[in-house]
Image 1 (cartoon, rainbow, N blue to C red):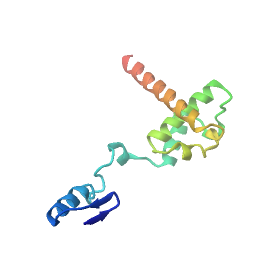
Image 2: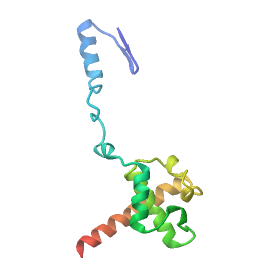
Image 3: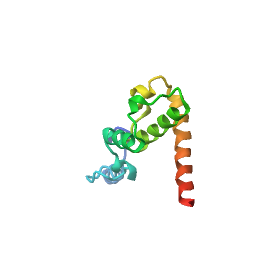
Image 4: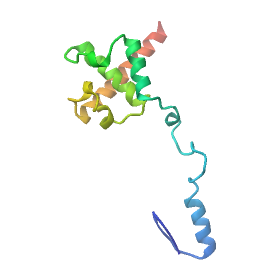
Length: 127
């Protein structure tokens, strides 16, 4: 019998050996095995923010979310932080610009902003 974190293997020694081999097949030494491709290309948060500020010509601390334009910028920033820096909503909400939002609203803001960005890219390609 062999004990593992997912349960016990019970059987003759040959069966246990083969079962353990299959059970441990993902424990290979290459660091990229089993990761999503995007996980290998995560950018530092500081770089993502710096590039966003440069591209938009603003400082994220000065985005006024009382206005439509500010809300749109906040949505775009959310997409960049989530997609490029692989941040979670609980990490993103620590930024002042997102501080008054719930996780549920972050999800819908992300979805809508991502859709807008995709539509803008495809309309630029058509031009």
